[in-house]
Image (cartoon, rainbow, N blue to C red; front, side):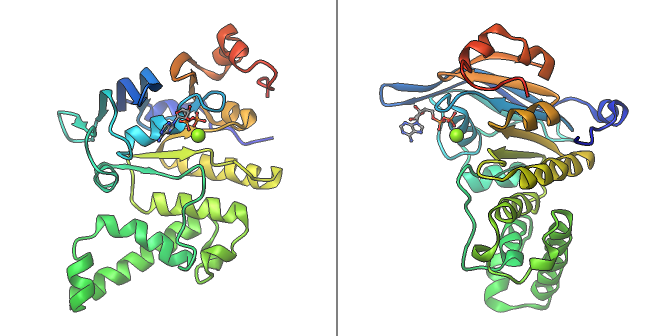
Length: 276
Ligand SMILES: Nc1ncnc2c1ncn2[C@@H]1O[C@H](COP(=O)(O)OP(=O)(O)O)[C@@H](O)[C@H]1O
Ligand SMILES: [Mg+2]
């Protein structure tokens, strides 16, 4: 039912690791939410992070994107053209965005009183120089830059199929469109790696199908993607590799076929439909 990438295009851009997370550990008081998790994403790959509710998936994203400072572990970003990886540990969320990671949230976070276009422009501003200074003084170069931001933001909206709604308030968008707008805003930061936390949550089957197509389109342009998702059909359709967590620990990793047949995974998901 879904269009699947040809193996050739995928393998041809399959390359080195861009994100390398080692021994990531996060304690909240006495509670260990993450216990020594290793995970990597290679350039151009779609990787899924799955696991039952409370497994620690969102906490993993929060540590990697600078919302939490992990108790232990390393988070390394391999930037093209740079010999040494950059450590993301200890960076603030906005610094992580500038370094090249962009994310969406399990619970949608949009500026509801802003238009669709403005929400995307906010994402883009992190790549521009004269944001605050220029906004105050309205220099010629600021106006030029602003125009470029608008054009760029429109092009992203076209990509996610929201250009017609550019001037709507984001709060007026249907749910599935709001989720796509969050992805657009993340893409506007021009990320090396796009992190999606349950992008299909709350979507109806048609919206989910559209989301799968959108993620495939984004990926076919070479974008590396790490996604948390409960919808197993989506995970199995999109992912090249899957990491499985349970109770803060990684219990398995492998291809969709390997994960489908992994006894530990089946046990962790007891009672849930895995064989999508
Ligand atoms: N800020 C926090 N303070 C205390 N405990 C937290 C915090 N954030 C997450 N946790 C705990 O960490 C565990 C993993 O949560 P989470 O990462 O949201 O799981 P998942 O996204 O896999 O459903 C849960 O037990 C949760 O209660
Ligand atoms: Mg979560």
